[in-house]
Image (tube, rainbow, N blue to C red; front, side, top):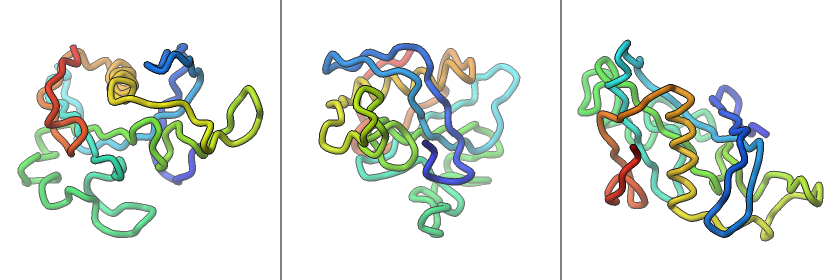
Length: 158
């Protein structure tokens, strides 16, 4: 279910075990990219959004019709220069902007998850983003930056 038109979505088909013990399958991860991935695939920057954020880092957000939440910092000739870097931002799983979340149907009941949605951890979110990096065949990121729930945390992706 892609609730946002013109949003890129990766369907993660492999079984994905959450930290809460549940396994999900065939679920969407909505994302946006800015700039171009170079031949060596060594110019990728993964941007995390804050808890209430979304994947629309820069440009015009198609939902709010406002500038992306980091438009002042991400874009051509800006601090994170999309002429030089390939910027990726995924809406985290559990989010409400196209990725697997409470508004999706539970395949076991055929009803919207709502409050029955499984508990999602930061680790689950990061592991879903690793699936996105695998999709692009990116083995090492140039940088990881972002909001209060990821970019400032200390963890290793690869």
